[in-house]
Image 1: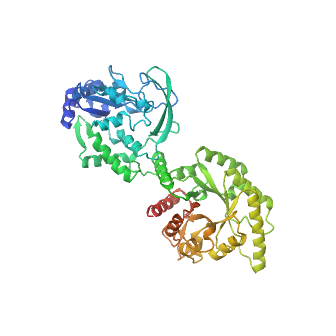
Image 2: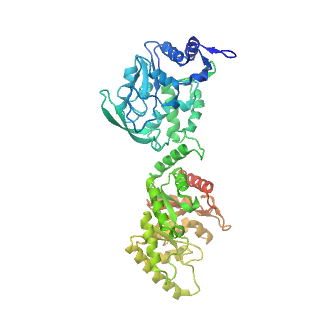
Image 3: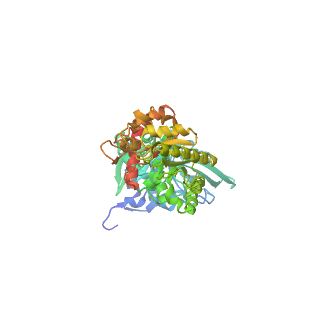
Length: 532
């Protein structure tokens, strides 16, 4: 080839032997023939070089991943996916090459151990876990060979993910033809990619393992033609990946906020982490976006599946409530609270029809709670207070009749501005259908200590069903990131955990709204939780 180096089969064999691959070895290969430059004989010569290097006592295997979900997989005829390159497909079509029947991640193999490697792959509970060619390669002290490709192609990552039962993997049902040509269904756990939703394939952080493999002396790196080649001990690199992922299940993921795959996967890890808690986590949607689809995208990345939705916008369009409920149901979200920024208790002449419409909307969304601040204080003194109290009891009675629970929030300027006033109203009504939503930032604005003066003691404590994750300082009205102010969030959450609090923590950072501000607040919240 003019102006370039011709890579021959013999040169490839010499390069492989120089790395340490020898006769009798078992090796899984991921390759890009174009990375070598010009290979004399093309892909067939590369395959010949591999087979001749390991010899008749050795075994070469290649993943032949497909991209089929609806069709029935036939190991004899279903082609490898185009995106994995030409070498696996050329290898699959070679005379004497066997292929496993696993419909998700079939493997082709040739050599002395091919049949043993592939046996019953379709019966394994996971495409890459125990009882698969990948786990058998590890147990047999085999190798992984990357020819002109990087660690993003290293399938053994999925074997480690499956062994650790990482929460971002998928369950799929797929069809295949058995050895008698009969259609069967494989029920597969720990799948790295969901064909239906087209999620889960990206693992941007896996490239960082390359350095760790070198440091562990489990990998040798060389060059053949223009291709950088890596020969790795399967058992050694699996140990490295397992050690890292046991400490940080997100280690193989990137931290790019615009990467849908990795953000969703990080959210699944957080969700699994939070399932160990007694309390539940929700988020105020108006803090993120007016677009419910964008809200769900953001919350999936935070592992949050419960939402608090604002009442005011929905009251203008009940049809919107049905549309939102449908979207939430399709993606597995629930509504924890229907929230009003203005008091729905109002004055004694507040419309019963308005209240019933509010409760009906809560039912439509599947929300158990309706959150409201107390009415604004008036100058009428005790007489107005007693009128308010009687009206509040009537509203709570109506809520009970509609199977809804009111959450009364403390707010400056209202009849529940201080913890004492808040508790006084709750105690006076004393109903299971009137509970407390505690806003610690509002208590700070009133000069109070939320944990030491309210959460740990005082009348509000026994009524508490929701704590807002929102922070502020005694220096002024400005809100700050959770844990950066005087709202004593860390102390309050720790105290609630000690008594198996089963209510909601709701992320409502009040930092001006928007996706970025919410994500910063969520990160601060997880820092608090991980410190406990």
